[in-house]
Amino acid sequence: MRERVGAFFRNTYAPDSHGVCNVCRGPASGGICRICARHRNDYGNGLADRTVLLTYAQGSHPDGPHQSAHEVRAYKGYKGTPPVERCKENLQLVVNTAIQVHYPCISRWLNASWDGITFVPSRDRPGKNHPVAALANAVLSNSRLELQKFLLEPGPGSDNKHQLVADRFTVPDRWRDVVDGKNILIVDDTWTTGSSAQGAAIAVKGAGASSVTVLCVDRWLRHDWEDHRTLIDTLDNPYDPLICPVVGRVCSRSADFRLTRV
Ligand SMILES: [Zn+2]
Ligand SMILES: [Zn+2]
Image 1 (cartoon, rainbow, N blue to C red):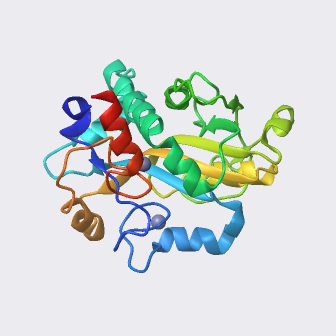
Image 2: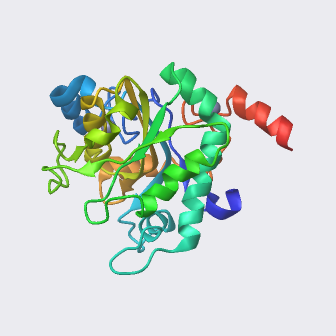
């Protein structure tokens, strides 16, 4: 894992880390960043109850595309280029390993186990053939989890790419039973402003879900934004799957895992 992605991915800071937003793990003073605070003000409990972000991607690097940024774009094809299989495998490996090691930590944090799973669909390529579906499948390839799958569809507000709106996605009627009263996991590849993942959370909560967890592979940071660059400058260590995305260090679960698997 460290050989494959450690050179360019970095672990995210845990929620409640100093100077980091509890929701998006971007830079923040006082626990929550301005964008997430605005979302909370506008949508309150309609948003995700828990957000799990695994790595930081470094956008707008002054020396040209950083490999971390390239991976999350290339895995699904970017600017007319076809998807790069190795990038997809790398992201799947990050997701699968994080769930294998830290699912107990995440479910303890949520105080519930997931019942159902979906992913954030793309407006241009909705449906299960989008590469982000492969990331949701990387959760499911963990044999301990048996979750019911369902699909979101783009809603009337799907043109609204950068702003959080309540009708960006819908839960089709045929999936209502899978969602109503259930604990749902929503998988996405990249968190930029959170408007896609939180838009999906609003749709799922609106369909009656008891709780929503968002699992996002990458938090997108930008070198050309000063507060982002300050955070990037603190990211020294290669991505380590044993660092817990919930507590931000080697947790009791990863200590067990290391002992039993070595
Ligand atoms: Zn935030
Ligand atoms: Zn853990």
